[in-house]
Image: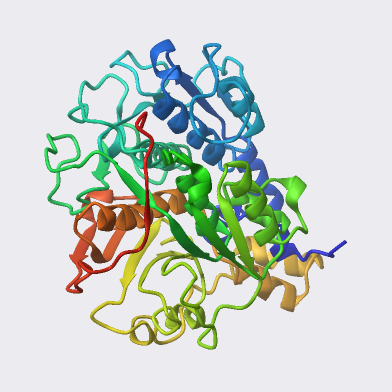
Length: 458
């Protein structure tokens, strides 16, 4: 068995409390998060709809990694699992498999409603996660705002769920006073800030075709969010999606805190093996690459030409347009306690080569002088090297990666449906309305990335 360091064990969002100086010890930070609880609700009609089930299960999977005091669901109608996610025969089976409980919450627990009609507040924080077409977001429970109805694109429920968990964490952590009392959302067909996600979107197409072959680079926080998103898509024949899964690392205890498909039973297993097993349960076809991704790597002509990148290092990113891919979507996340909600998405080829986009080393805040780190040092729990290693790890939240994954995979879906491709999308989940987008100047009209048909039941 691997002997894990403190840096391999620490919950990546609990680390936010250490780095911000909000607590004076690791124990105090863990106690703080153990007090965070969340209640989920879903009505009878929504519970019998596959897209609402997908939103509920995404919310459970994300929230139980953030609200360490527990995530409960009630009421939960008795219904078979209609979402394509492979987590059991019934909706209740899936909720429990993902770490939720089926129980009434304590009074005052923050509430996320999955769909449903406007209602009186059940708690000081009570929001609804709603979606239509390619659009997803949240509104206060009593509010009657809703996106104009349209056939649901399967990633919109995931987007709504991720934004809902982000808003709930903003509320319990006190990071913004308006949390839970505003409408927040966006369109995955038109993510520009000028697009009103609640308005009529007649230009949105029905999802008809899906990618047939993809290469996933990195299988941690982002890579697993990509897989979850792919799992929600309505493949008529799941086996027609061929995936190459590339990573060199094994799962550590801290992986579970950000990575949506990891649990404690997978510790010490190679990420490639664990994620291939899950993808195959979903019905996909997989191949694995356990080799470092860098400029020496080369894609062969018979391998997938489209890649989704989830690397967290500049060296690998600088090689993305050098190894033979025709189209790459890369999502980078903030690392520090101030910017961990930031998402910056790039597509390649772009107006600048990857070597210029990611030129220079990242500059992170030095947090070793925060009280919690000094306490570890003075108590002898860690030496100076151990403190430096721990302080250098990124802060991370699973709802950020989930949001990024919906945006990244939507670039591929838009490409397949003749929509706009973006060279850059930049947003922060603390203030989604201030996002920016830059359309690409590249001509992808002749690119044929390979496609398969979506299920007619989508």
